[in-house]
Amino acid sequence: MKKNTTPVAFILLALTATLLPGLLSATEMTGKEIAFDRSKGNCLACHAIEDGDMPGNIGPPLIVMKARFPDRAALKAQIWDATVKNPISIMPPFGKHEILNDTEIEKILDYLYTL
Amino acid sequence: MKIFLNPFVFIALIAVTVNVMATPEEDKKTFQQFYSERFSNIDLDEFSNGVYALDKDARSQWEAMSDFPPYEDALEEGEELFNTPFENGNHYASCFQNDGQNIRQNYPLFDTQRNTVVTLELAINECRIHNNEQPLPYKKGDIAKISAYMASTSEGSATNVSIPDTKEALSAYQAGKQFFYTKHGQLNFSCANCHVQYAGRKARSETLSTALGQTTHFPVYRLKWEALGTLHRRFDSCLINIRATPLEAQSETYKNLEYFLSYMSNGLPINGPASRK
Amino acid sequence: MKKSQLIRTLGLVVFIISSSVLAHGITQSQVEQAIATAEKLLIQSAQVDHQWSTAEPLIKQAKKALQLKQYENAYSFAQKASQQSTLALKQADTEQANWALNLPK
Image (cartoon, rainbow over all chains, first blue to last red; front, side, top):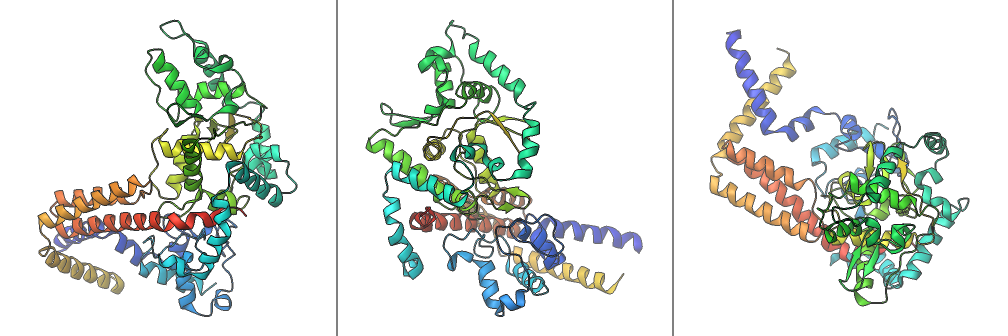
């Protein structure tokens, strides 16, 4: 039996890997990983974050998020499309331009509120 | 058009209308003033040194490297290429004013016959074509070496780009200006976002350079490239970073951008080639 | 097999079954049409100097999936590509007015 299940599992995995790479990575990565990943959130490019190596200083450090953004929706809106508040904002509109999907942004939000 | 409903945008638009319509000379004044106010301890000429004008730690490393510049061999090759006659016996020097010596600061120039911007690299290739030689590939290789040599003969000369008083020259300048301030790519950055508004800040550990002085030191030996590259090659790198598709080297858009950017640095000394990270 | 692994594998199975069911809903010609649309939008965005580097790889992925007859997948890539170029064109439009706000004062 074991001989049979291994290839099946392998094919399933291979299929899924080719079919749904975005979804797979989104479900497997933690909010912190998405925030730190250079091809995803890459938050460290501009913001200092606890545990983050060599952060940029273009945006404010991501600290005491709960005090600064008591309203989760307001923080989400800022990540989704910062140009609504400031049309020349340097912050990429992560949601509007589909840089990250909704699940990924929600995970980042969860993570940000631990800071 | 929803954007006009935003009162912030509306007021700001009225406020900047003056700047949109400003003459190149007025633009240049505002542009240079912006940097001298933000970096009041830095002399205007120093901006030709890019991030090394701003970042002291990076500067000392860079200066140590300048004792044996990594572009030295390429520069020598450039001089040799420049002085090697074409098959018809003519030299590059025959195509340029002052035999091609100390002219870098006048480029890019606007050709009022053809109504287009002529960059130094374009002029080099047109010289080759005129002498029945194949044009060189833009962005890197021999063209960057020749351009580097020509720049080196202008060392210390003040950037002196002129805009003829014609509708076409002004509109080329305007197009370059608009591109510079326009957001591009999936990441939604304008050139100005990094190199005006956040110049001097750090993206990760890299200091963002000022747009002022960006054109004076090209072609550049980039450690990342391990070779010389032209300004248009550098434009590509920026666009790739913001997830925009790079444009063709010597496309009208890149040429116009170079025209605007060089005009903004008028008065700053030519110091190319130079090395950069 | 750990519980979490079991859940994950089950999840994958459900996903693949459901996507293969959905795949029957998309025809080859629908995919081809979606790719053609994506290519048209890509060119349009380039014409205004606003092409995004994210769009073309998605078109390539769509074409690859089409070759493998993974129509639903191919369709989804093509649509994503179209969406990226549509956003790029929107950006070009917005910036027609917005760019001037960047000017140093």
